[in-house]
Amino acid sequence: MTDEARRRDHGRVWLFFGLVFLVSWGVGGLYLAFPRSLTATFGPFAYGCPAYYLAAWSPTLVALGLTLAFEGPAGLARLGRRLVQVTPLWALVPAFLILPAIALLLSLLMPRLGAWQVSPKDILIAAPLVLFTTAQIVTNSGPLGEELGWRGYALPRLLDRWSPVHAGTIVGLIWTLWHVPAFLFSGIMSTSLANLGVYMLGTIGLSLLMTWLFVRTGGSVLLAGIIPHFVINGLGAVGAWQSRPAEVLSLAIVAAALLVLLARRNRSGAVDIDRSACLKPEGPD
Image (cartoon, rainbow, N blue to C red; front, side):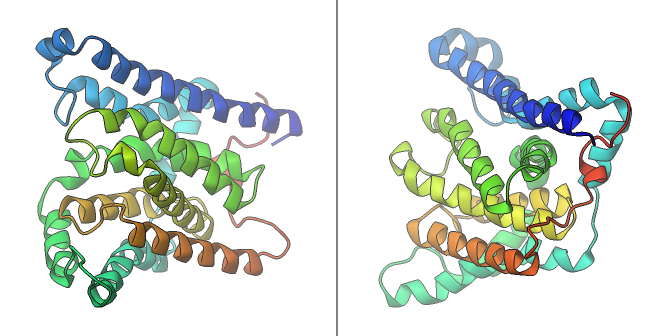
């Protein structure tokens, strides 16, 4: 990719963020401004409502639209390959197990320090039952509705310019801000707007963990985005992860440690990603 093409691609990531907010905040804002008429037409702004799914799926929809517009079918094919990329196989272990391991450790340690609402049974039995015996991957909009956008479109373009820590933090901050309207509707978020600071730390921590997975897998959206998002939402569905201070602080520490190890591994500053698989390769534009 030429320097000029790279600059254009960097600019498109901010176009992506702008369009995502325009769609999601626009739909949510209309519901807040005209709740009665829109609820009568489309139903309450919640799971199952078409307007909700348009807002919740905006990262993926915008990513697909921009990719098609600027890169054509070949770009969509590259994005699709990263969506189903399951290699390296070892990455399945951290993708599925890091978050439950943190939750399990807290369920064993925190009762010694005071009341803790989560038991090991919630993590070892209840969460897997929700994840693997229900339609959680489809009914919960997070993994499929967001990850082609955050990890598929935005993250590789940010990594092309910034370090994993900076790129992951930027995505985490924007990801947090994008969720703000959801706090204003009942039944969507598991925590309140008063806990936005704690929620932000947890979202940045999760984004940094996903960034580590993204770099180590060479850009897999499945391993770095879909699976961890699927797992944390499943834990949340049974109350085993609720963005409590101990949870988000533990996640942030683990993610930071992994990125420190990654930096030591790549002392040259290079990021182990096949950029041709993520971004439009050099050639006529």
